[in-house]
Length: 309
Ligand SMILES: [Zn+2]
Image (tube, rainbow, N blue to C red; front, side):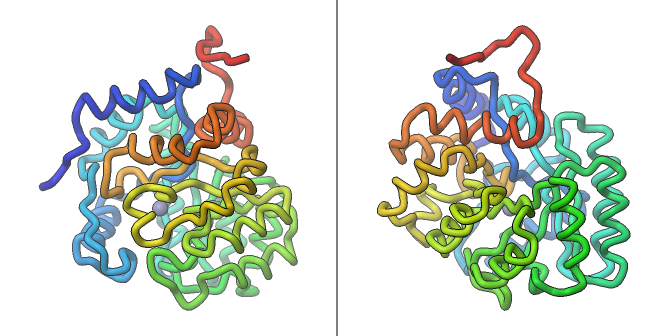
């Protein structure tokens, strides 16, 4: 078992990052918690250099039991995080959602997360999830191998747009393309549902420019930083430096995401990768805490620690 990042020094490094910025902690919109046996299967998949990894070696840094993973992320000072779970086939989403209800109940700092799949009855369980208090949805176009524009999903997108519930969607063609990945299918969904709060995962890697363009065009579209800008991703799909001025301008709609615990490097590396973009401390404060806190209505900590001018 290789767990290079799981030590106290790692935790210290993360805390020093946000303390220097005067933040009360971090908001991470893209972390994976799911039923234990499903997560183990995901890890097996990464170990096996499957399609999801693009055939690249991917040692999971935070391979640990759920309790330990929760202790780690809280130790980092992540004030709110998500339980990104997703089905790879029909008949699975509802079961995942029922697990997520229970997980949210016993994990108050996790934003209650739900998922969906194009299948008969999807709008019923999406509505039930919304009524049960879901704060965010996850859609995985690559693993699910579906068209997000599938008409079976249309009512659900409408419902989520109306409820203003963000949907973190893996729709870029990284690390390897799927049948329906890329900007086209998502653009079609947004054309029909322009107020849908899509959070484009991984900055849309590797179609960075097209997805950035969608965020510029639609006010409710956001991007999450998950794995983008890291040494690991820069080797596979470097972020075009020419896009950085546009990324700076979009600073109120970029959200910290990390893919914890399924990352092949220590957590702090994601943060330092954002820092080295050179977009400044205000941009970092917005991305690492303020944008997520505003989107999800996360109250400042009691006592106002970390208030910045
Ligand atoms: Zn992810």
